[in-house]
Image (cartoon, rainbow, N blue to C red; front, top):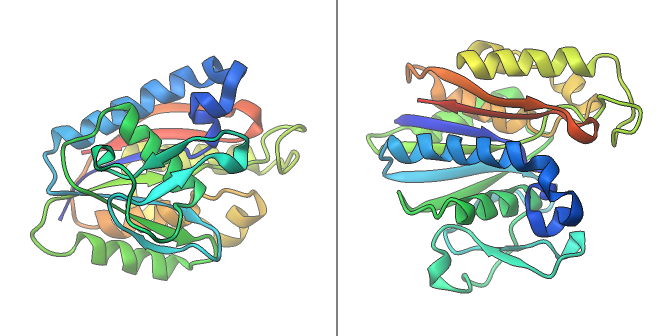
Length: 239
């Protein structure tokens, strides 16, 4: 059963070494993410599952100890999912960027509340598939917490990665309301095609959360909402 969830953005710029001289610009987002992870720890889960968008070649599960890196962003640094003290993780696929950012956040807060696994979700996965996968993750008596990684639209300004789209602000506001209210139905109702147009990579992970949270009776709180660099970043905690 799902006992808590945290929703965080997944830009590699959250990692200070990647952001370099601009690191302070996302200090408030990092603090909000740490607060959301504190809510997860307070729920005393048996297991933490990290969910984030993944490229077509890297969906599926990742074990605790899986390794990610930020070399693709010009920084020769590695992160380990979960038990960082275990050193290098098992041989296998490298964590996609969203899950590497999550691994960094867990290291940032010195996560030790529960074992960690991760799931990369393809951006083209349908609403129905997301909801079904979320329900499967939360099935059974085990106390499960979710760390859900994903950005809102990337079209909020002229200099945004997706350029300016007048629909972006409204889309992001709707997601923010849904996360603040733990509104499962509103997350399920997010339009797949519109989300893709707006480059909102959080759509599939959020809808997986909606499937996991059905019937869980969780309440929501929005901890951060902003669009630096023209990309919507949202942080929320459900408990």
